[in-house]
Length: 90
Image (cartoon, rainbow, N blue to C red):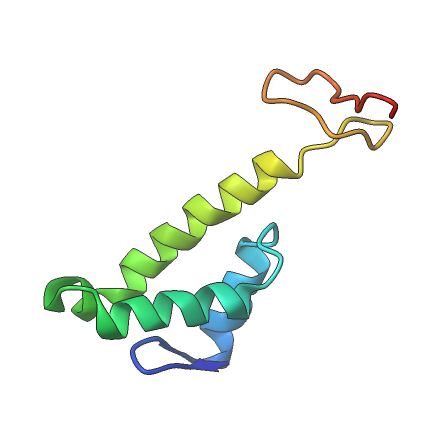
């Protein structure tokens, strides 16, 4: 469950988002940041539609984290094209 100033999620919705957006390392931190923005900076129309806009925002964040955390079969980080990222030796 998440209870912010604008974002108020019941247990079922919170669990659904936590399951759907599994690539976000800290869903609570992202929700708190989003809640702060909605409360203090967003226009009234966006604030009123917080559920839909936040769901879309979380989907974008989840895709970004998934891309940043992409790994190959050997556990190496990979680029968007699927090539392994190697670090040079010091």
